[in-house]
Image (cartoon, rainbow, N blue to C red; front, top):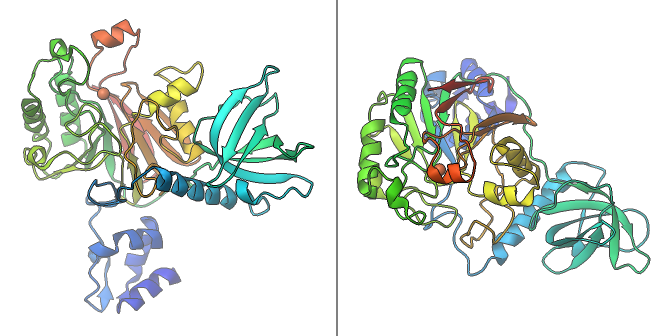
Length: 441
Ligand SMILES: [Fe+2]
């Protein structure tokens, strides 16, 4: 018997039956109860297993809205402050013996120092040493990396450093560099809900693979799949890049969404479909992005739920983080030698940094928010991106990271860039043990 769960229900005036406790433990224990509290009815004296939320329902864990959470600020100061304080704490949680000090509280009293800071600048000396300037909100210090240090440093990421002060006290000679590293304790059990993960449908493009998309829908309807995640770029849009008209089969964005609605209305009505916008959709291009506008959502059947980009949802007791993935291009530029087929490596770099898009002011423009919505918090069980039209699946420290495939075949632009997409692959995930299957359509 889990006493914390029992206590939670007792405090709300009911006794919980043993079967319900067993089921709650399968779904993630007390954490699950706390996330789903609003969906539970505590009015009867005995809380039975049948009172738990149905497994083919999902819960919103964290959603962005321009007029709501987390609120807009006058400048980026709040966002960066919240990023630093969260990731500083995360670095300190990783070890009980290692305590990182903020830059402004550093003490120069000899011995090894541990400090954390946000990367303000990075350069390489003539002799091949990496020089990083790290800062907190009131102070900064130069860190000289060992010549053997090969990992990449990204501007505005938060790192921990251990090392020795230089004789004049103006720099630290680093011995090790630490990262926040999000991870999840592997867990098997809970409901076996099957989730189909796809992205970048691009309805309206001449290159939209309609037959494959219909094939994917038939598969969902006949193979016991309860959820579908469509991870942005639902339509091709208009005016997204110069001369896009010549690539369009439907050159009116409303008609593109009508066509999408017509298609996805063919999912069985008991299949729940979650959609988020991407950079081709009818939402402003800054991030985070609101859900699609009401007029567009009104076109879809009631089993379709339109959410923000990024968004955290819980399905079958597992947390799914859905992010379209625009920042992947910033990582591609920052990591020498990576290609658009290295999405697995790039998603790992995000997880290591505990952040979806650390670098400010590159390909992505951000909304100045009161707190940093792009921190990977809560830590997901399943992390999904799309955007680059590749496909990869990897497991990093208990987190299943999927770059979802597209339903658009190679475009002229991609041909020119010598990029071969990996289209028409559905990734089916089981929430029971995070096993997966890639199905080609
Ligand atoms: Fe796309």
